[in-house]
Length: 123
Image (tube, rainbow, N blue to C red; front, top):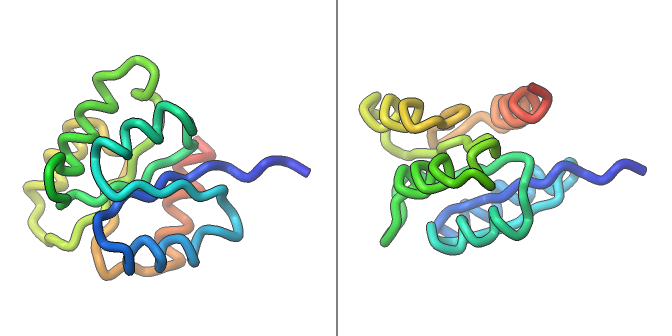
């Protein structure tokens, strides 16, 4: 049997991590980080196929994690999907400018999230 693709979920809200985990665990090997520093460390050790990264986190923001990952030769090829509760286009534009592979707004459509992740991994 083929190994499942790896997905790293990064959010400082445990309830949101539980929701994402329950949605994706059947199709992906799940890794979880609750802050930016742990996210970058987990990316280095797990080398996930995709990262779902919350934009607003205490300490290191999701945009800062994205910028750090894209500046790191070992991590820059990992697709990162930003997740945000904010509806402004400014963060989205910043995220895409920094190299985000996609954007998901909270609350989100489960099927749309699954499709986006599958499409990004397939590319």
